[in-house]
Amino acid sequence: MGGLTTRSDRLQNRGSGGSPQRGDRGTTVVPMIQHVTLNNGVTMPSLGLGVFQSPPEETAAAVETALELGYRHIDTAAAYGNERQVGEGIRRSGIDRGEVFIETKVWVSDYGFDETLHAFDKATRKLGVDRLDLLILHQPATDRFERTIAAYQALEKLLADGRVRAIGVSNFMRHHLDDLLKQTRIVPAVNQIELHPYFSQPDVQKAGAEHGILTQAWSPIGGITFYPGWGEDRRSVIEDPAIGAIAEDLGRSPAQVMLRWQLQHGRSAIPKSTNPKRIAENFDVFGFELTGEQMAAIDALDTGVRSGPDPDVPRLERFNMVIPED
Ligand SMILES: NC(=O)c1ccc[n+]([C@@H]2O[C@H](COP(=O)([O-])OP(=O)(O)OC[C@H]3O[C@@H](n4cnc5c(N)ncnc54)[C@H](OP(=O)(O)O)[C@@H]3O)[C@@H](O)[C@H]2O)c1
Image (cartoon, rainbow, N blue to C red; front, side, top):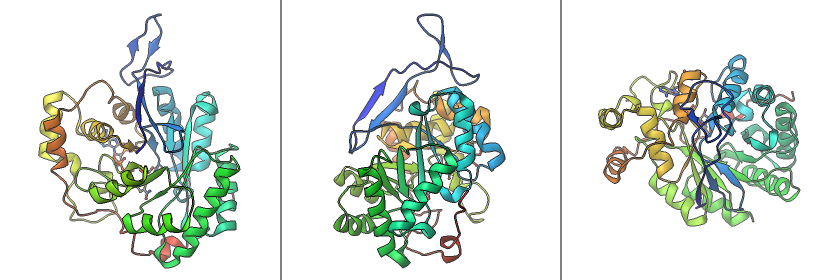
């Protein structure tokens, strides 16, 4: 597992919202950004902005707002259809490219060695950058696992060539990691998985920790348990009474409590919002702590039941989606 460092990077707060504090020299600053050190020594801000389902026309503004508030990590994907707008938001913010950690994902239809090298070209062209900070495989494609391996070998080449600073995977279960590790050389830096209080995947986290792979939580505030389109009989974790009670005790929101829980466990989290108030709320999680008892109470909510897609089940219609060149 990568080591956690808390840097008092007092960033100039160029926007409004969040919890700005007055700095020593009278400048407005935002609280600390916490970094995690990946298994290859690269540091990454633990908390980033997710943009799954962020409509392209709202994505640049969301990214710009987040960067103004102090976020320095954005998680996108070829499959989200908004890499171009992520790049635009970064440029509009005026923040130096080198200060922003850009993570994106290769989609399944681009798996294969040459195809994945080409996917890197497509992603960087859309984002308008030369190099990526973290490039990961979006999921194991169990109907074409040999192509998944070849795709990962292309990531290894991109890493060796200095085109990406770190590589990883997403939605890999223990057995996918075992199969990957047998056939490749570089241990993934990150495994991004569905992870919220109702589905915390302890065994996948343990598999990651055994190999020095950082667990990164997708749906870190449980979006997959409440946003539309993923089934009618779900229970929304953001409305959980135990989380609500902790939030009330602390004078925080349920989303903030869940993000704090993720970070205190040493995980990376990438909450999505396109709403400026909620983007700020989700970043304002560095000024309080959960007690051991509160952490344990949230840990106890795990149901072992996922809300998102099963990584072992191929979704052909989705897998075959073509990622455009531009
Ligand atoms: N690798 C994968 O397969 C995979 C799958 C899913 C997601 N991801 C990544 O993980 C990121 C986060 O996951 P997610 O988008 O599934 O779920 P999430 O971040 O847990 O939740 C997002 C949902 O919560 C709402 N929301 C945001 N902040 C809130 C707050 N403070 N209070 C109440 N509601 C709030 C958002 O709506 P508003 O926008 O209206 O605020 C949105 O509906 C994605 O954006 C993506 O980058 C990866």
